[in-house]
Image 1 (cartoon, rainbow, N blue to C red):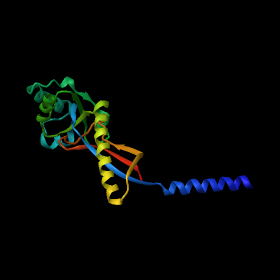
Image 2 (cartoon, rainbow, N blue to C red):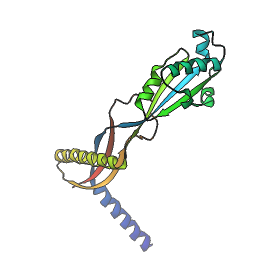
Image 3 (cartoon, rainbow, N blue to C red):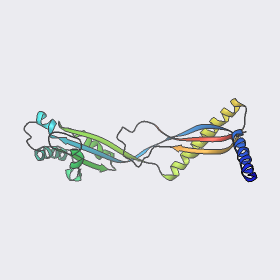
Image 4 (spheres, rainbow, N blue to C red):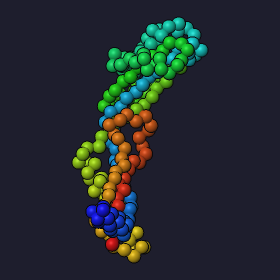
Length: 198
């Protein structure tokens, strides 16, 4: 019984000590300068739309050939496409169709493909960016300095002084995933940092 009481007193002492420790939490961020390295264009050929806009096209093969001829006239080789019929089937259209995908590291090639438009064809632009481990660590250093400066301002307001870091977490986009929105906006790497407040 004495052992249980001693453990209980020790636990209460630890909890009381833990409750007395004050912390301050702040966020810091650094702007990510993206370098787009990969482009992907998805061309969805949809016979539902082609039926109304071009009734002379009686089959998907005719429709594809008409599109391919337009691409060849713009110096694009249709053999570069990867076809994904299953992806088209998941869209639930009534008539037949397909999705053609093209990946490139050339912005110019992506622009050529995006500029060839026809009724019944929907084009979707996607991109990937690069964020090297070295660049990521450089951004973390900037974000940590920003978080520390913000925490110091909070300490001035609260009348304390900044101590050691007790917790840190990161929030950043994942450049290895394909994004499907235009890439001219700003992205941030953000750190949430907790410091001891003395």
